[in-house]
Amino acid sequence: MSEHVKCLIIGSGPAGYTAAIYAARADLKPLVIAGVEPGGQLMTTTEVENFPGYPKGIQGPEMMEDFRKQAERFGTDIRYSFVSAVDFSSKPYKVTVDEKQTILADTIIISTGATAKWLGIESEQRLRKLSGGVSACAVCDGFFFKGQDVAIVGGGDTAAEEATYLAKLCKKVYMIVRKDFLRASKAMQRRVETTPNIELLYNHETKEVLGEQGVSGALFKNVKTGAERKVDITGFFVAIGHQPNTEIFKGKIDLDEQGYIKTVLGTTKTNVEGVFACGDVQDKHYRQAVTAAGSGCMAALDAERYLSSQGNH
Image (cartoon, rainbow, N blue to C red):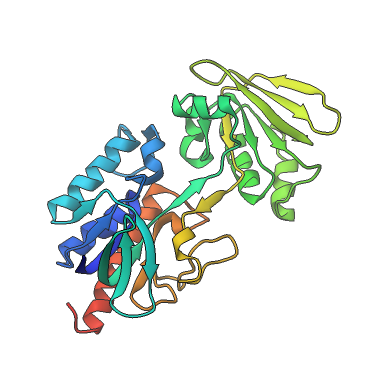
């Protein structure tokens, strides 16, 4: 059983839905395979306050619902299935959905996103689900902790960058580093070390995030001495990296060493003609809803131009 589409979008979220809005308006009749987590990371985000056009802020799931309705309004076909395999070896490209159905596509837009890595502690996950002050995005959520004490876990460039960002808003930032050094670049290390309200806790790991309905503190353990230290905080940030959702594309498309899809600078083009990538699956720097949406627009325009050049539009 197979069907043929002009434009197949794999993944939803701000990138996939924006690509669908533009592709549908260009009469490409896009099909969106929304994936196992329709709406992407924003489905687990409560308040989104930094997306233009929502002056009062909006709940993440509600915003994704708006994106979805707008894509459907222009005739996008959205299916709540998942892609189990892809074959880019011949045109039209073959995509297997739910391990049984084959879809043939003239162009493909990949917007499968990335997933934040978590520590995996029970209290961290419980408070995260309650939206109780546990976050993997300081730029998104730091504002809510203005003038408060927070902790951030991680020792790389992202953690260092987010710690200095939080230091501008918060009274005190505890930076929890498992090793006895920072992995971040020298410039970022210097910035962290010279910021007066960042306290570095080297050789420490998180034992528990404290609090019932919201974060009230955290318990850290010195991995060398075994000594425990409790700090009073209201926000707990995790910056130990993201995992791009590219498992099914390994060996089919060029990925970088971290698994992100490589795109041609200034475009959404991949090394496979007619296959485009947008959103967090190819962006490890910004990772914002608004940048994902912008690159979704770019992917749809790139796909439309590609089809026109093939005389297929």
